[in-house]
Image 1 (tube, rainbow, N blue to C red):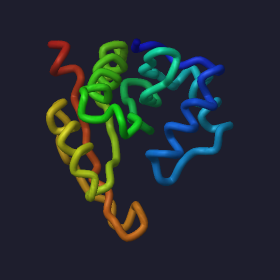
Image 2 (cartoon, one colour; image 1 turned 45 degrees about the vertical axis):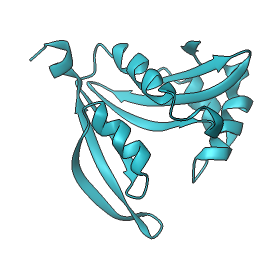
Image 3 (cartoon, one colour; image 1 turned 135 degrees about the horizontal axis):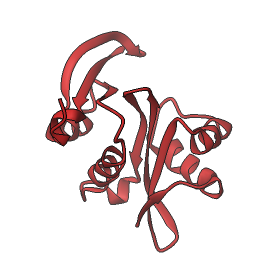
Length: 146
């Protein structure tokens, strides 16, 4: 089930994050993002277990994908795409979504390309020795608004 994250989900979200994301966030940052009115934080849950999450932060007509992860046992099943599509569908005021992804994360880059993101730049050594690919998605084109 795709749903909005709740404060009671923070510990489970943090466990998923700790297994999948480097650098990870402190639990108080997860809680802040769940409660923040400028964030959209959603989870995918099955049988009471959180299998993945995604978070975007919005400012005016822009959003930044701040974190997304799916537990390893549930990857390659479309859960990340479902999470992102669900969040993006609810961003009526947003025209552009930005993200940074490590150049070595081919699976994520493939997903983002599939969803229509385009590379717009790079950040050298953003992830330690690895660069970041900066990508953007124009939502207004998908919604037919100019």
